[in-house]
Length: 450
Image (cartoon, rainbow, N blue to C red; front, top):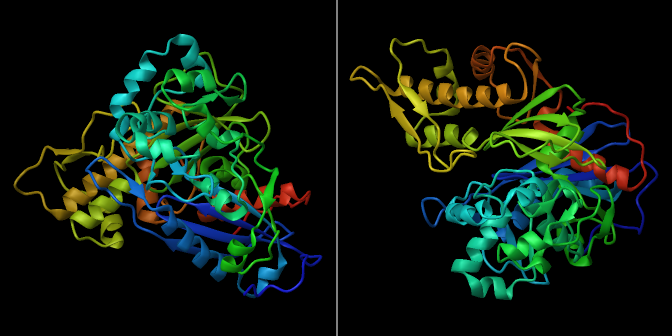
């Protein structure tokens, strides 16, 4: 039974943001004064049926969303006026028309589609210019090509090939859609037309009708259905806006301005800077994607193996997170080196992770220190692609740069100061909530969360 009385929110509404991340979902309430109120997180575990695969049953996402939203909204649920969404990019969620998953969702760290990149290599210069990004196996386009080769029955049963936050919206509203910021990361998006590259999809052997309509990030995309409303404890009919990809939402949530550089460390790491357009040709070291604002673009240098490599080290060496970060201050002689390519890295899909320069005197702390240095070096290379070393400070968002010992190492390796953004741990979910407010025509002050 739905516990929310009435059919309209009160005069002082909250806007609910939901961010569907790689390892957890976060829900937060944004007040009319621009500040975040309650924030709740609920996690889930990915599956790897094969060494290079990364999957999850989307129904685990839904269970986590229900848990996080109910904890977050609590007795303020009746004040939720609209819902905004953000989520991890790339990958593909194959569903029927009713939103039921046809198979587990394939996620961005997945590398099974690496051989399908040959199809992209054969497309020609003009197609690559329109797609504006170097091919990578974790994007929806290569994954759909792989599914066509190895799982044609699953594709035959599918109505939609969605991004994670778009699957969640379909579950909430019964309507399929996407936005430019997420579509731009699929390797099926035409930057010239600001829409799907249907002709390129067909050349790749992908059904264009699997791709949901593209619409603005802040547009109302439907109302909350009674079943999901009851599960979440919210009012049926509550407007749900289209939403945005997590990095685009984080840019909005922190108010990144032109000329600034922002670093987010989670499972992966993203270094972003706003840009005027897509440039002359794809840069193999970077991606260019759409922001959550009309006609906006940002350039991104991404590292797949950031928090992913740190989590691996904690698990494999039986360390605590405190022990890992304490190793940042370790100053042993002739310390080993670590290449953090545990999952295929953009621009180097065939590279593998490794330790080198190991000696008999090295121990566990030396290896933990090497992992931190290897990840920091990868992040520094990404930052240097977007800005000259020793220049612009780097703003940090996300929860992966909170420990002061890790931050000191990053500052040394990057050779530039780090500036922590207030409320950075909730940047994407705040951006999602801001889109909900914009969709309702509400003017929310630019006040950092936290």
